Image (cartoon, rainbow, N blue to C red; front, side, top):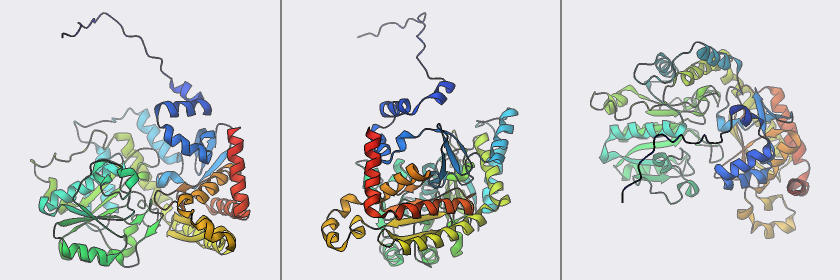
Length: 479
């Protein structure tokens, strides 16, 4: 059957498009409808449970979101570590504005980019050891894909099996999804099969795996597990892992997408242990909290073995949007700000203060708070199961529901912190009883006290009032 001839004299009707200015003026109800119709109605369900669907942010400055109705919300969420420099840092804004005003080149794939070259040089200058070859992309998933690919290219098919950790999160693109330990995210996708899992931080499990399976050529782990609930390996683990990898000719890939870039008080979290991986990855805040930038950094000898010859140079070359001009200058300025304003030192000081005060709150509210852990401004606050908050006579009965109710107390607290105190916190993927605090590295002592006082006041209500106040909030929201 022949197709009808295309009539090139017919001008298609212009679709009804929303302009930039009209988008700015949309109200919360309209945005909610558009989200449900065109983005993710299932996700909207959870936003409604937390009351987050009622808020429309108008602008953001420093440590705060400012809503359409003038509320200033203290950001202790930090975009899962993406907002290290605060919202709209003036130096980074100025660098971007100058870039635009001078009409500098943005996408420059046909030529060399001085901005990509400068950013790569800066990252190599910062990275310890001989980590000095850089691949630039846009996201953490892309950076981790590049990290695993360079390692596999070096090791070859016979040693391509990847050892990864339980409760890991390395991204949601198909390759790194295979080593992201989540049945939810993995769903029913067909995954890479050359992988083996061990408990996080268990050096004996790693040793046994490497000694028994010569096909394992790559170890990939987050230095600090973010989605796992801000979990660190035992002291000495990374030094022993480095020694084991050297002994068995295994490449160690350190995922620093969340915990890197000064978040822990050092540029890379692995630096505390005095070791250097073979490959690492950064993203999140690398773009100065204004642009999407990811980077893989590898040892030069490994990179050259994988891609160093003309016939192999383009196997995993820079992608279309890797090394975009304005993104690179945002990252370049951000790295300079990190050192000029001593944001790593501030992360260490404010983090120590937060952990000390949170442990005091844990002693004050032992039935609610189970454990405080973390380093710098990457902190996990773990709540007890609901049954542990109940009077002795009810604990046994309620314990039967703990699994189904896991994360509910965190949800109540997070929702009420936002509603009653204008404080935003983050949650975790795997251990739903954990609230994670990853505020911008510009946080002051006053910001920390604002959060701490709000949390203390909320927890002082006790479990019964927390639950009833949350249910009252939900009922009010439903009208």
